[in-house]
Image (cartoon, rainbow, N blue to C red):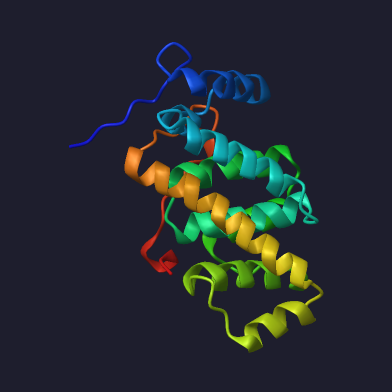
Length: 188
């Protein structure tokens, strides 16, 4: 069985050390995901850079978390579900939205529900939505820019979710209160 090291500053490759230090300052601790990604300085830098770019999108915090949590659920990533639930709570994403995303139930706000559905379509159909699905999303009040930003968020989740699957990342204590397991009815 292949095992991955969850690096700390003293075990990380030299090129990952400044990135780890920055993450530690930002989070107050080094999340296990980033410790695992540190094995590849390029992946760690790419992930952190893309996360920063996604934060600059035109999407609100709630909208970004809808895209991220939807992808986490569809990809079956327990680590990222726990982490992004915690982040969503810290960023004041409405609790009913968080619960809907964790349980794969509709969001009460129709516009946010349209975003959840479209993020799901992009993931499940691997970027091949029907024209009618694109039109429904645009008719809900989103733009062509938002369509591309859904792709950006989906790309970010491929990096973290797949790393967690392969490295078997352990949920950090900070995220443990929001541990999540996928029920059979939640599989896409």
